[in-house]
Image (tube, rainbow, N blue to C red):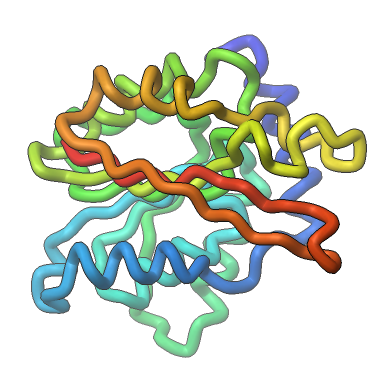
Length: 211
């Protein structure tokens, strides 16, 4: 276990206890429905929600027919994910949820078809994503894909004293350096949205990385 893990778990237990997103991101829905169009094949498609938080995307994956796994550094987040699944009307929904940080996932190589991570990388300590990415890529089968959304260096949350959970933003150079060595194909895009009468700007990377 990394030395920082216990402190990190406490921090993210506190965040997860306070709530979290209630609906899946539109970008996530589009990616999975476009990439995996055949509903019959989804039951044989294993997808991991990496840094699942309260489980809103985990539930979406399970509802959409994927063989779903989910992990988070926070035991509270994993518990909320399981509770969210249990509240669904469809009692057959299942997800294998477990506690793990992004650099400590204990799964076999080439065991996943898709990895999803939303709003996680910007919340890590320096160097963690760089350490984790080769391991994340190793989990994917050939042709498998990761879909990642995370803050750029231009996002208003980066460096804000009001948001201690966002530790870093990524430049385009960072993104290419982190992903290029581990994936055969990259599709790198930005999501830019203003809020509060255009006074703040949400500026995120949206990366599809194919093994």
